[in-house]
Length: 258
Length: 263
Image (tube, rainbow over all chains, first blue to last red):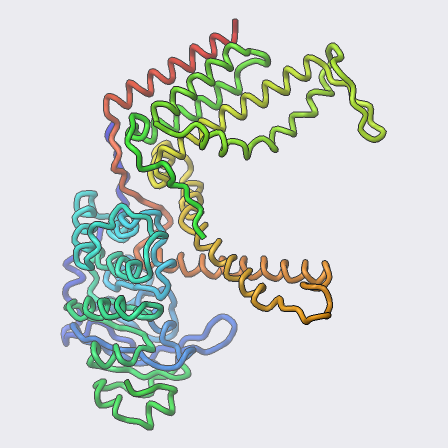
């Protein structure tokens, strides 16, 4: 009895995702303001254009609005302002495409990995994009290969170490072939060896990346552009080495030199 | 803290290699067939038990392990103990509990032991099922047997997060213990019952809040990967002819057992 799977109706034409805006901007945030339902204003007049292939760090103290901003990239939160991903405005009818274009990796791998096995977790994205079964399997294979976790496909997520879980979290979004990788605190909670191998992994990837982090040494090493946030505003945006040498800026916003 | 479900799951045996759907269907039918057997059908109960033993043997499981695990149901069958004293029949013995005067009847005893055997044998079969099937396969099987997807999703999340939750609870308990200090000659460790109950209540509340917040984050992670209210999965299982044969044979045996119960 072969099993027939119902295919979802929405297909994602990959070609729409490859273009983006003409000037090479793949993600643009324009004058974004956002308040939580309890009235707390988390983001104030944020404008942030990101070009294809750029690797950008979002730094700043806890509560600066880094994670809140990231949640806007794929429409999980929607504030006042304009956001465009790969040339598409973030609004309801585009969400399915935008979520495939922005690979969002959350801080806690136990939140990111919600399926019983590694294979199912990595297959979740491509499967829900409406890809056929053979393509899903091929993508799971490739994604696990990319993060060096291929032998783990049939393992159960709750038996893995933090470093392994983090790599597989990244594979879960790589399988969707995103244009932008958005990572929230990827190096938090990793031991030095796992952290080192994660940095090397991210370094090899030719994707556009936005990483919210407190790990200034990683920023120095991996991310040429740095955006400093504090109290919901962008305070500074520029080349990492330049900003990192500005002792006063770092101290005012609770950061340290690497 | 790890509770291992996966104790015997990676063995090789005929039962382990069966399609999980066959195993789920046969187990459910086995439970139903036991429930349908009339009280006191001892021969049929014996056949049921033999079938169970056969499965345990074929799955190369440890009989002691199965019996140990099955003991957890015994307290639940106590609910059936009332049958001993409430069924009309020949009086066998009397018991005086407080001001109650209870008379056990033969029909009542037959009913009680029949219920006991039915539930005990059924539970052991369910244990054979879970001990011989990896949990993800079991979830797949349920999904393809058209169990409502919301139920399957709940079971699957339960399996994924029960360890995360028990770790969370463990951390709360440790945090309490680390601060449950006592001065020499001071008041009793832990304070009054009322105070301790309050602490335990707060901890349960904390656990609920943390789980609730986690569920929001997990939902966000699902939305980010394209979830649109329908859970999809790939099923690697294909029914082979051996699955049909074993499934058919098992159903035929259940039929025989039911016939034996009618005699």
